[in-house]
Image (cartoon, rainbow, N blue to C red; front, side, top):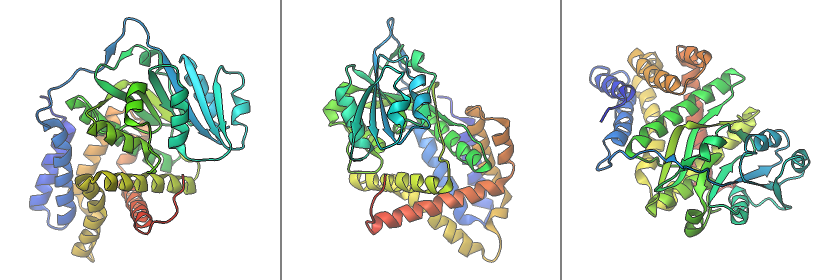
Length: 367
């Protein structure tokens, strides 16, 4: 089995850093364990490589469900991108002009006066869907892959997704785009064993019969997509990934929206970890900030991020993910300036800690 050279390089360099570099000993340990974790995707026994979904001789029929909350700015573009589907259902919650903006399209609109959350909105739309294959796409997400989706044969897969991309407009957006590229690379590596671990919440094709059997989406966590993914896995179903299937999603328009979005994501993941007693994934979220703190204490008063071997490891990993994702040259160039990446990484860990504390003290949830 061919291994990803990016992961092998990460593994080798982090091992050398662990042996020879004592200044950043704790960060080196983390990178070493982290690379082992992702190598395990490729050595996962006894998973024989499985083929990706094949094509039907005749196109499948797809129902599209779009949950929309005050989405007047993006809904028209979203609906236009999926108009090749056989049925489009928009579940609207809010008070803006979302419904007015899509009157020219052939869509079924289900309006709700009270906002009860995305999971319940999705369930309402899925239950009304006429077809076995249901595409779930957020109102701020767009795709040009409908013709390819209609030719898919999911075989043993319960759901399938593809590469999620963003359109960056600022330095901060480019940093988020790099993060999305890393996630795409992780899914690509996971798919080497024939399936991936989780579906993204903004874009994915599902079998309605599987969703019905599992009881649809649950509203007891903030990340209904991740919770359903683990229930699928527990029930023996598999999730597929195809590179040629793509979707583009809008990034938060302000830092406050970004902060709200990430706190919701991370707190939702913590809820799922607790619900399914996922100790190992939870530890991989908890270790980075703890090891970073230990490293800062251990190297005080020196500056740990001047450790060039660790910088080189991070650059190799991120560059590999950007090249795989065919990222624009601006993002590849940005990687050579490590300071923005370090600051963004620290910001993510701080937000994760905030989410952890919110869940610990059971503060009010917000969608």
